[in-house]
Length: 340
Image 1 (cartoon, one colour):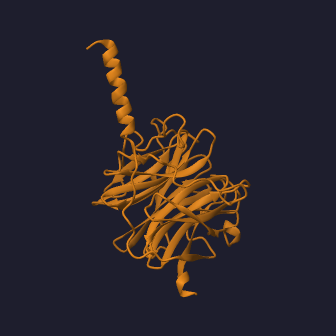
Image 2 (cartoon, rainbow, N blue to C red; image 1 turned 120 degrees about the vertical axis):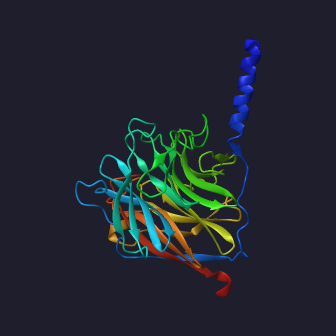
Image 3 (cartoon, rainbow, N blue to C red; image 1 turned 135 degrees about the vertical axis):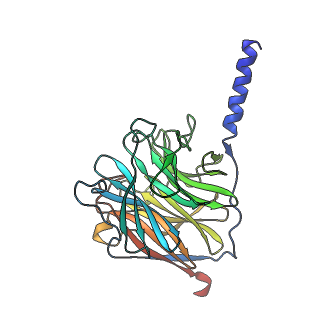
């Protein structure tokens, strides 16, 4: 084959491969008749999981709960920061309120793509007898998303390369990606995640996969944009959690303002892709320990009540050193048609 033809064919194949990683899709319609309403949010006064003792792997910050309910037990895959490195640890609970630490699960491998800064801030699922954990790793501000698997929560096998890479030059997620939140629906894994572009704008997008390893990104990403100037999320979005209730998909996410105060906001969607922010649903920390930062939501659907675990801190910060701990609260849905 002539060199020119070979080069042309290679270019076509590369283009086709790139296009194959992007497409339009949506989640199937939510169950039930859509109910218009709003949520109230009541937070518990004290953290449910605090920082570890001085010198421990989670002594500086404890954040990012990802919680799986399995065989009458709650498994909390949380992030711990020691002042230099972010790790993933495990705590267990019979009720989701009182937690027993079980130690560190993952640390970054400095001799791999993970670099030495982070292997944390992940999303855990139990699927077909296996624990799956998608996590954020890589050099600071140039993160990617990896996948680790385990049968027993002791021995973990990591994919050699990131399973969700950054986007191409000029894309909305070109520079860094993180904050994965994964749910299973319609025979697919759907991952909602943060993407950062070269202007350092942090927004939210979605990808889907049949196996959790090979992902297709939504061509029309991002699905949630920065707020308008002066709004609570005008400086960055992150850490989404998504669920289905009352005939809609709902998202609770972290918003950052220009002072690096973080709050939780909500959005709703008919298909998991087209989102409308609920500007009437913005929540701040209610206690001294989380007065500056409310972040990292995780949810459990209990009918019209949504149990929420979250990270919190008393120092404004976009990422770490915020005296972080994990708290809990309850979202309660009120149908507005019943109040008229």
